[in-house]
Image (tube, rainbow, N blue to C red; front, side):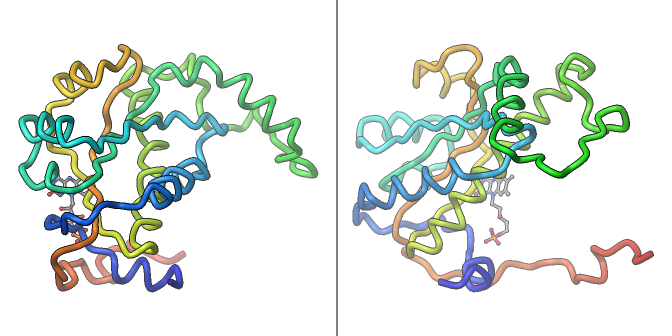
Length: 200
Ligand SMILES: Cc1cc2nc3c(=O)[nH]c(=O)nc-3n(C[C@H](O)[C@H](O)[C@H](O)COP(=O)(O)O)c2cc1C
């Protein structure tokens, strides 16, 4: 599918067929997430792939009912300790030639180093990166004929406990994935004129 078609036809899907999602497709989704961009290339996204009927049944107690009806649910998480490797990631990036011929004038710059950021700002920054990986995954799912939904409504603490996640790995969102069993019309959107504040 052309990217434009993927973007235009994607819908949040909340009804799934019971057909399983091929393993190769799950790999494709994780690969799409892996290739997402991130600030300083820190790549803080982490995933738990939930497929077994037992694990999905447990999930149904912690989130919206439809989520556990999907044959696969990916719990998208953020590694809250990712900034510890910020300097290493940055060096790796520089060594790869990412900034060749580009003046990186850090004195003017703009993204604050993590030492200057408050806890809340760090959390927002890290999750922002995970969100990009999630959207990559969702668009690739549509490309493969799958449907999914970005779900923020769930009990994070309980999910982390049941998945046995270490303290620094925080659940960010759930993405139930399967073959769509509905064909929703486009959902309402604001007019473009409402979005562009001004052109200067
Ligand atoms: C950050 C985010 C959080 C969302 N959380 C939920 C959710 O918890 N439950 C749900 O059913 N849909 C959720 N959605 C889906 C939105 O309701 C949906 O994207 C919106 O209504 C527009 O519909 P569309 O995705 O079909 O275009 C979420 C979407 C985003 C991007």
